[in-house]
Length: 242
Image (cartoon, rainbow, N blue to C red; front, side, top):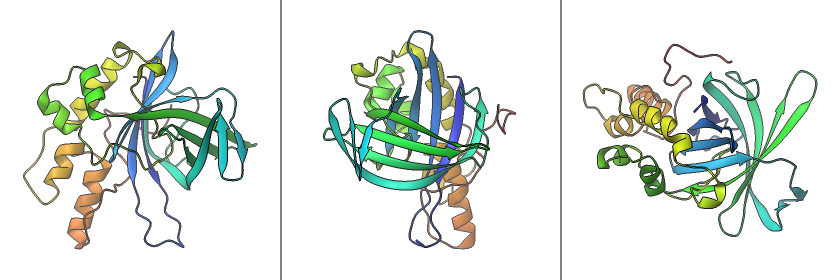
C-alpha cells in the first residue's frame, strides 16, 4: 500500500433526503501489475483498476470491451482525508463529479471528472465487487479480524471508485496487498473506549473513523444514527496532500 484516502458524497442542497456516505480507498502498487485500489464501503469491499482509454458513451449507456453498461447514478465526491503517495496530486476538499455504470454481471465502470487550474481531467475505472471471504482468505485473517471487516451487504450501490472483485481476472496477487490489509486491520482494531449507542459502529470501523464520529455527533444532537461520517480519519502524523 502506498496511499490512503477517505472520501464522501456531497448531497445536493435540493435533495434533503440524500444521505451522506463515507468510504475508504487504499492505493496499491506492484512493479509488474501497476496500480489498483482496494475500496472499503459500508456495503462491502471491491477492487478497481484505472483504465487506459475511454469507454464509448451514448446517452445513459457506456460500452467497454464489447460489454454494455447502463448509468446507475451521478454524484459529487469529496476527499476528506489523504496520506501517503499517489500518482496524481491529491488534497483534502478536492471535488470530483462521478458517474457510475453497471454491467450485466455486476461489472462496474466509474467516470470521474476533476477540474484543475487550467482544464478538466476525466479518468475511467473498472472493477468488480469483493466478498468478505475473498478479502479475509487472501490476507489470512482469523475469525475475529474477519468479523471486524464485515459490512452490511455484498453488492455495492456504486460510489466513485467503489468497484471491484477478487476474481483471478484482476491479475492482483494476494502478496501484493498483504501489507495494506494488515495496516487496515490494525486501524479497524484500535483500542476502544467505553460502550455506548455507537459501540457497534466503533467496533466495525474504529474510533477514529468517519462513521463513528458522525454517529457520536448524531447522538449528542439527539438525531438518528446513520452510516455517514465526518472529515478527518486515522492519521499517523500525516494529512494534507503529498
